Length: 214
Image 1 (cartoon, rainbow, N blue to C red):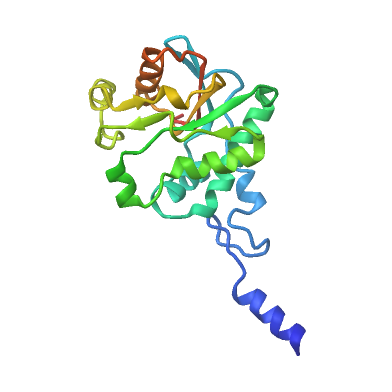
Image 2: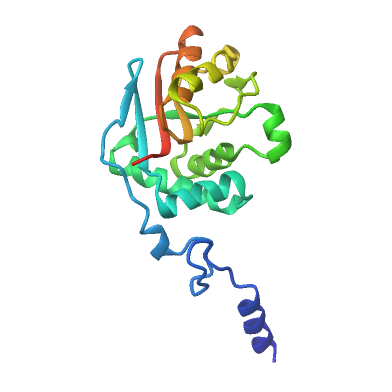
């Protein structure tokens, strides 16, 4: 009777894949859906002010739903799969041999109050567990409550982000900084962060985004 009850509870509370709705693996993202994520080619996607910018995959279908689930729909459990995708890309390009400090793009306090969390901090926490690299949430602070970027042109994005970040040098320990974001479209966010860091005499920087548009 106990085994029957346990089996019934397993069936009732079995997790469904957020992407295909199937529950056979009881995972938030099943292996079949994870396998559909599209990696970018190896190597830097672009260079901004002498800093290499890497993008793990293309912002299409499953990866788009994964990122939006973590960012907008409170699917915190999906942060692991976003981090794993980034980790698998780092492994492919041989970056795991290096040592970095993970610095997620910060949110303004007003945005955090509304959203209740910084989605990229969640991803960095999971990426830290996979890589062994430490997270640094205090090095860069967002002091300007910027508008959402997705409808803005590159020029408008740069204006929107101008002087948006403050660097706190006391939290820098000399380790190479890995700036981490979910989407790199025009590169404006990374560009402003790079400029802020370099102004604070921190130049040992690499940028890494989960995705880039096709």
